[in-house]
Image 1: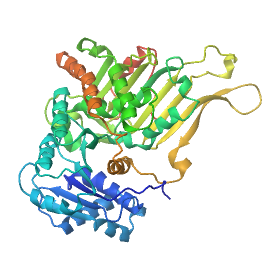
Image 2 (image 1 turned 30 degrees about the vertical axis):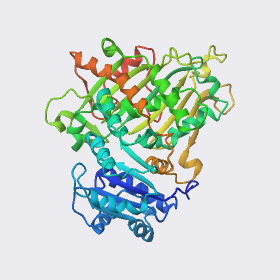
Image 3 (image 1 turned 90 degrees about the horizontal axis):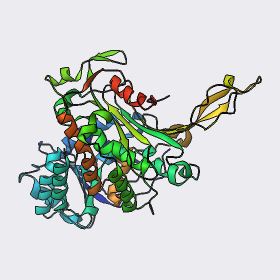
Length: 491
């Protein structure tokens, strides 16, 4: 059983980097699921591009293997797999040279009226040159969209350069800067929780909320991505995009409507309201760490420097105390935490309410704990609201902190599209609500850049933490100093 399906119009999707990891692991399996659910029209076409020399059948064989690796066996219906593969074609193309571009033009020549999507699953430094080639080859139509992945730049200047290069070819309405976190069901449910329930909006402010925690934890290390990651680090890889977008959805004011620009206008206001972290304050409100050798699920794993093979000050863990300087959020800290090789894989948002002003219950009734709303993004999407209840039974009142649990898998009993499936279909529809606008990207970099500069000026490098832990001890101290503690995922 699946969620409600609304078909999209016929489209051509051209994937630059069509034989790469992103395409084979996420994009093509996601498109198969949309084809299987009859959301993707039967006459839609998908073209993979790369520099490799492959026939159509070679490419289909490679995608067939990817489907068997990344799609649940129960979802692999042989007839449907072959029908989907029949939608695929392949061209060998040099993204910045001349090879393959005439053939691409001919492949698209008879479908100018269709929605045309160029997905750039390439290295970020190719975004500008590829878009320039698309423009010079005359492949842009009024119904064309281009999708670019993060990272969009490595700092404010490079982000602006990317935006200008892409914007020289495409109008802003045609540019889809994808952040797969915004496609997660629970992230979108934030809007419904906040703005479709009278229960939350009256208390969604400094009067009732003590603080907010956002944790994105991974158990994996950098592995064969060590060289790439060493030029990125946790701030660029996770905070500048994923985590600030989550913070915006928590902190934004109610938009006038659910159209793309109304939502993104409110997110932009949050980014502009973030209290700057100047280089002189960086050591007070940020903690950066780097994992050393340890154990994950009982298995010994090497440290970051062992995987990299050289010394580095790149952070694999980051905790930040952020503040939103608005009337609603004044005095409410937002604690962000992300890292690799942590104790478990989990992404959660914790909205911690303030304690009640006075307890009327006897001491032996038990501790009265503040209410807590936990929004779990992965691995088991759902929402929990922790409330104080009386433990059933005679003999007086015994209080217990218990959750009201909304588990998506248990409640809705349907298979709902994953993030990439949903976002790909939104691209076809032309719906930009869940995609970042140019000014959002640049505002996020404006806030992050002084942190990077503060680290460059600091005499201290990242603090070591053992793989399989919850990060450096200083991250705990960051909260303890404020009289708070991190809520471990699942508790």
